[in-house]
Length: 183
Image (tube, rainbow, N blue to C red):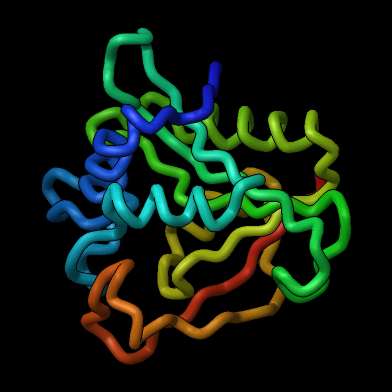
């Protein structure tokens, strides 16, 4: 599995990939969608560019079958080496987010391969532990990560109800759970 850093020319396609997987309707979004409880987009090109600019150590990695084809999957990796970025952070802890696989390919084990490649990439950069947040009601997705060695920390984070950059919640009981994995 090859993951390469997204270039600026990839950002539009990555935003479309992420929105299709996270917010497409149940028929086209695959099993990982959030459309039943969050409306609107998950991201857009301007937000991705702004996040990359604001977090210069972060990486938006993509996987594609061929160099001239659109991305089939992506993942966000970011070192959390500065105490205070996340509770309990210390050097060697990385954040993994926005793991996305094109919905019609989610039965190819591509997500497993991207996750393993992202973990290996971070480990190769000195990570010894990874953290992520997942919307707490996503039991099936949380179980998927747990089967791959991630564990619930018991920590929760509030859902950003006042920030619609990542979508408009359809429920008032959303939060994030924190998962982590030793590498």
